[in-house]
Length: 278
Image 1 (cartoon, rainbow, N blue to C red):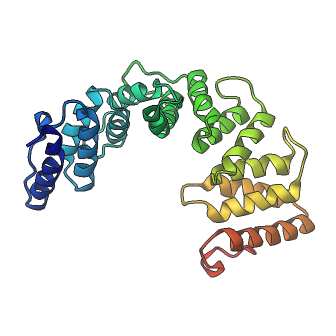
Image 2: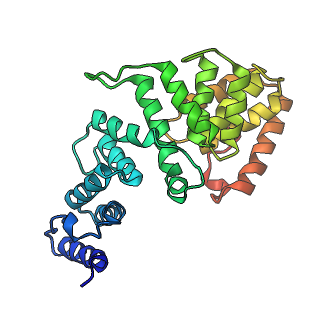
Image 3: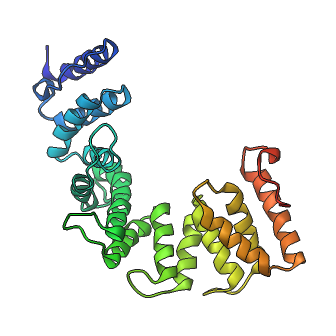
């Protein structure tokens, strides 16, 4: 049997072990030496999806130690969230830092494929610096957090664009600029980020850093409120603040605009939404 034929057999054996209730140990010697990191990454993901955390961690660790960006990212996520392993933010930070400092894009196909991992890692490292990691040398540093968010934002990551908008709005880690906050929030909103929609709506309604457009701002805030999750109380607060200042004409037009947008852009029936008149 050729060495290159080993991976399908390893995958099959692993899955059979999971199905039978006892996973087989990860064996890197069964992999093709030339493609071992990539093969181990794929095996790790297969094991993870099959619910075999031990084999997943072993395979992903091997791939990560041998420079596979996807494995470093996935393992970092697992440690950050305590997903299949004991939660360890410092280990997550170390792994994701390896990913974040990899070059983005370029003509190399492998680098292009790694770009989504890199951008997500940049955002997560930014989040670590936003708050620090207790009992470690990773201290809160808002200036560094902004730098990481900006790197990812420049490459179009919607989450980074929103977080950068927040930092510009608050003045965290550098100058305060509502105009830059609006710019980055708009870019993020256009990619579907609902938090960015709420922030941009607030800026437009208040006319802070941008020309005041109360009806448009209240429209965005109303849509954001209806798309918000249970932990988005701040969106409700911004909406209530705007409602307290809006004229009847502004509110009626904003409500109509929001209704039309929701009808055109969501698959949920209007009856399932909180009535806009409340």
